[in-house]
Length: 110
Length: 118
Image (cartoon, chains in turn red, orange):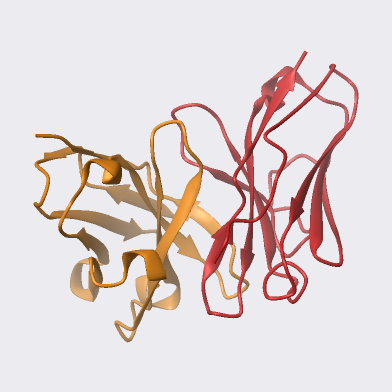
Protein backbone atom coordinates (compact mmCIF):
# COMPACT_ATOMS: atom_id res chain seq x y z
CA UNK A 1 0.00 0.00 0.00
CA UNK A 2 1.63 3.27 -1.12
CA UNK A 3 1.42 6.38 1.00
CA UNK A 4 -1.05 9.05 0.01
CA UNK A 5 0.55 12.00 -1.80
CA UNK A 6 0.77 15.36 -0.06
CA UNK A 7 2.88 18.43 -0.86
CA UNK A 8 5.99 18.51 1.29
CA UNK A 9 5.40 22.09 2.37
CA UNK A 10 2.99 24.99 2.13
CA UNK A 11 3.15 28.49 3.54
CA UNK A 12 0.94 31.47 4.11
CA UNK A 13 0.77 34.75 5.96
CA UNK A 14 -1.38 35.35 9.02
CA UNK A 15 -5.00 35.85 8.05
CA UNK A 16 -4.63 34.12 4.69
CA UNK A 17 -6.07 30.74 3.67
CA UNK A 18 -4.12 27.70 2.55
CA UNK A 19 -5.15 24.33 1.15
CA UNK A 20 -3.29 21.04 1.50
CA UNK A 21 -4.10 18.27 -0.96
CA UNK A 22 -4.01 14.52 -0.37
CA UNK A 23 -4.14 12.25 -3.41
CA UNK A 24 -4.80 8.53 -3.29
CA UNK A 25 -6.60 5.98 -5.41
CA UNK A 26 -10.04 4.49 -5.83
CA UNK A 27 -9.01 1.85 -3.27
CA UNK A 28 -8.64 4.41 -0.51
CA UNK A 29 -9.46 8.14 -0.74
CA UNK A 30 -11.71 7.83 -3.78
CA UNK A 31 -13.55 4.77 -2.60
CA UNK A 32 -14.60 5.74 0.91
CA UNK A 33 -15.53 8.80 2.93
CA UNK A 34 -13.16 7.78 5.73
CA UNK A 35 -10.55 10.48 5.21
CA UNK A 36 -9.09 12.14 8.29
CA UNK A 37 -6.61 14.96 8.88
CA UNK A 38 -4.16 15.28 11.76
CA UNK A 39 -2.10 18.16 13.09
CA UNK A 40 1.24 17.45 14.73
CA UNK A 41 3.39 19.97 16.54
CA UNK A 42 7.06 19.11 17.15
CA UNK A 43 7.52 16.52 19.85
CA UNK A 44 3.79 15.99 20.27
CA UNK A 45 1.36 13.26 19.34
CA UNK A 46 -0.88 13.88 16.32
CA UNK A 47 -4.25 15.51 16.94
CA UNK A 48 -7.40 14.72 14.98
CA UNK A 49 -8.63 17.82 13.12
CA UNK A 50 -11.06 16.47 10.49
CA UNK A 51 -12.80 13.12 10.17
CA UNK A 52 -15.06 11.54 7.55
CA UNK A 53 -13.77 14.02 4.95
CA UNK A 54 -15.34 17.17 6.36
CA UNK A 55 -16.39 16.76 9.99
CA UNK A 56 -14.69 18.61 12.84
CA UNK A 57 -14.32 17.05 16.29
CA UNK A 58 -15.59 19.06 19.20
CA UNK A 59 -13.09 21.76 20.12
CA UNK A 60 -11.47 22.12 16.72
CA UNK A 61 -11.71 25.61 15.25
CA UNK A 62 -14.14 26.16 12.38
CA UNK A 63 -11.19 27.69 10.51
CA UNK A 64 -10.36 24.10 9.57
CA UNK A 65 -12.43 22.48 6.84
CA UNK A 66 -12.16 19.41 4.63
CA UNK A 67 -13.47 18.28 1.28
CA UNK A 68 -12.98 15.58 -1.34
CA UNK A 69 -13.24 15.27 -5.08
CA UNK A 70 -12.52 11.94 -6.72
CA UNK A 71 -9.27 10.52 -5.42
CA UNK A 72 -8.11 13.81 -3.85
CA UNK A 73 -9.01 15.15 -0.43
CA UNK A 74 -8.19 18.65 0.75
CA UNK A 75 -7.72 20.44 4.04
CA UNK A 76 -8.29 24.19 4.08
CA UNK A 77 -7.21 26.45 6.91
CA UNK A 78 -8.63 29.94 6.80
CA UNK A 79 -7.55 32.96 8.81
CA UNK A 80 -4.08 31.50 9.36
CA UNK A 81 -2.66 31.95 12.83
CA UNK A 82 0.85 31.44 14.13
CA UNK A 83 -0.30 28.45 16.19
CA UNK A 84 -1.36 26.65 13.00
CA UNK A 85 2.29 26.16 12.08
CA UNK A 86 2.73 22.38 12.29
CA UNK A 87 2.90 19.21 10.23
CA UNK A 88 -0.36 17.96 8.74
CA UNK A 89 -1.14 14.38 7.74
CA UNK A 90 -4.08 12.91 5.90
CA UNK A 91 -5.18 9.32 6.32
CA UNK A 92 -7.69 7.03 4.67
CA UNK A 93 -9.30 3.69 5.20
CA UNK A 94 -8.32 1.24 2.49
CA UNK A 95 -10.03 -1.72 0.87
CA UNK A 96 -7.54 -3.99 2.64
CA UNK A 97 -9.01 -3.08 6.07
CA UNK A 98 -5.91 -0.99 6.63
CA UNK A 99 -5.10 2.66 7.19
CA UNK A 100 -2.76 4.59 4.93
CA UNK A 101 -1.23 7.96 5.76
CA UNK A 102 0.01 10.76 3.57
CA UNK A 103 3.67 11.69 3.68
CA UNK A 104 2.91 14.85 5.63
CA UNK A 105 2.93 18.57 4.84
CA UNK A 106 4.87 21.17 6.79
CA UNK A 107 2.86 24.36 7.16
CA UNK A 108 4.85 27.52 7.70
CA UNK A 109 3.10 30.70 8.82
CA UNK A 110 5.21 33.54 7.46
CA UNK B 1 -11.79 11.60 29.93
CA UNK B 2 -10.20 9.22 27.45
CA UNK B 3 -6.52 8.60 28.12
CA UNK B 4 -3.95 6.30 26.55
CA UNK B 5 -0.76 6.01 28.58
CA UNK B 6 2.18 4.22 27.03
CA UNK B 7 5.23 2.62 28.56
CA UNK B 8 8.57 4.36 28.73
CA UNK B 9 11.42 4.69 26.28
CA UNK B 10 13.44 1.62 25.35
CA UNK B 11 16.94 1.02 24.02
CA UNK B 12 17.47 -2.29 22.26
CA UNK B 13 20.22 -4.01 20.35
CA UNK B 14 19.74 -5.15 16.76
CA UNK B 15 18.05 -8.52 16.62
CA UNK B 16 16.26 -8.06 19.94
CA UNK B 17 12.53 -7.61 20.55
CA UNK B 18 10.61 -4.79 22.17
CA UNK B 19 7.15 -4.80 23.73
CA UNK B 20 5.31 -1.50 24.18
CA UNK B 21 2.21 -1.20 26.32
CA UNK B 22 -0.74 1.17 26.06
CA UNK B 23 -3.09 1.47 29.04
CA UNK B 24 -6.54 2.84 28.25
CA UNK B 25 -8.90 4.63 30.61
CA UNK B 26 -12.02 6.75 30.42
CA UNK B 27 -13.95 4.50 28.02
CA UNK B 28 -14.94 0.88 27.44
CA UNK B 29 -11.67 -0.71 26.30
CA UNK B 30 -13.36 -3.50 24.35
CA UNK B 31 -15.55 -1.08 22.43
CA UNK B 32 -12.92 0.39 20.13
CA UNK B 33 -10.14 -1.02 17.99
CA UNK B 34 -6.61 0.01 18.94
CA UNK B 35 -4.15 0.86 16.19
CA UNK B 36 -0.38 1.24 16.29
CA UNK B 37 1.46 3.89 14.29
CA UNK B 38 5.16 4.67 14.23
CA UNK B 39 7.20 7.70 13.26
CA UNK B 40 10.90 7.50 12.51
CA UNK B 41 12.99 10.58 13.34
CA UNK B 42 12.10 13.41 10.97
CA UNK B 43 9.74 11.17 9.01
CA UNK B 44 6.01 10.76 8.55
CA UNK B 45 3.43 8.53 10.18
CA UNK B 46 3.41 4.84 9.31
CA UNK B 47 0.50 2.54 10.10
CA UNK B 48 1.53 -0.79 11.60
CA UNK B 49 -1.71 -2.58 12.32
CA UNK B 50 -4.70 -2.91 14.60
CA UNK B 51 -6.23 -5.14 17.22
CA UNK B 52 -9.82 -5.72 18.18
CA UNK B 53 -9.64 -5.63 22.00
CA UNK B 54 -12.90 -7.57 22.23
CA UNK B 55 -11.92 -10.60 20.15
CA UNK B 56 -8.16 -10.23 19.98
CA UNK B 57 -8.32 -10.31 16.19
CA UNK B 58 -5.56 -8.46 14.37
CA UNK B 59 -4.69 -6.96 10.99
CA UNK B 60 -1.08 -6.06 10.24
CA UNK B 61 0.48 -3.94 7.52
CA UNK B 62 2.26 -6.19 5.05
CA UNK B 63 5.58 -4.55 5.85
CA UNK B 64 5.46 -5.83 9.43
CA UNK B 65 3.89 -9.25 8.87
CA UNK B 66 5.93 -11.88 10.68
CA UNK B 67 7.69 -9.38 12.93
CA UNK B 68 4.86 -7.68 14.79
CA UNK B 69 2.44 -9.11 17.32
CA UNK B 70 -0.41 -7.12 18.84
CA UNK B 71 -2.13 -8.44 21.93
CA UNK B 72 -4.32 -7.17 24.73
CA UNK B 73 -5.24 -7.84 28.35
CA UNK B 74 -8.83 -6.82 28.87
CA UNK B 75 -8.57 -7.25 32.66
CA UNK B 76 -6.29 -4.23 32.83
CA UNK B 77 -7.46 -2.40 29.68
CA UNK B 78 -4.04 -2.59 28.10
CA UNK B 79 -2.91 -3.19 24.55
CA UNK B 80 0.56 -4.36 23.59
CA UNK B 81 2.69 -4.16 20.46
CA UNK B 82 5.73 -6.41 20.20
CA UNK B 83 8.22 -5.99 17.38
CA UNK B 84 10.90 -8.61 16.90
CA UNK B 85 14.21 -8.89 15.01
CA UNK B 86 14.80 -5.20 15.51
CA UNK B 87 16.95 -3.26 13.05
CA UNK B 88 18.39 0.22 13.26
CA UNK B 89 15.68 1.54 10.95
CA UNK B 90 13.07 0.50 13.53
CA UNK B 91 14.25 3.41 15.65
CA UNK B 92 11.08 5.48 15.97
CA UNK B 93 8.38 6.81 18.24
CA UNK B 94 5.61 4.24 18.50
CA UNK B 95 2.06 5.44 19.15
CA UNK B 96 -1.11 3.63 20.08
CA UNK B 97 -4.36 5.24 19.01
CA UNK B 98 -8.01 4.51 19.62
CA UNK B 99 -10.00 4.20 16.41
CA UNK B 100 -13.70 4.79 15.87
CA UNK B 101 -15.90 2.71 13.53
CA UNK B 102 -15.40 5.50 10.99
CA UNK B 103 -11.67 4.81 11.00
CA UNK B 104 -10.48 8.03 12.56
CA UNK B 105 -7.75 7.86 15.20
CA UNK B 106 -9.43 10.07 17.75
CA UNK B 107 -7.20 9.61 20.80
CA UNK B 108 -3.48 8.97 20.81
CA UNK B 109 -0.99 7.84 23.41
CA UNK B 110 1.95 10.06 24.23
CA UNK B 111 4.33 7.92 22.20
CA UNK B 112 7.18 5.59 23.14
CA UNK B 113 10.66 6.13 21.74
CA UNK B 114 12.36 2.89 20.78
CA UNK B 115 16.03 3.24 19.92
CA UNK B 116 17.80 0.36 18.21
CA UNK B 117 21.55 0.64 18.47
CA UNK B 118 24.52 -1.63 18.96
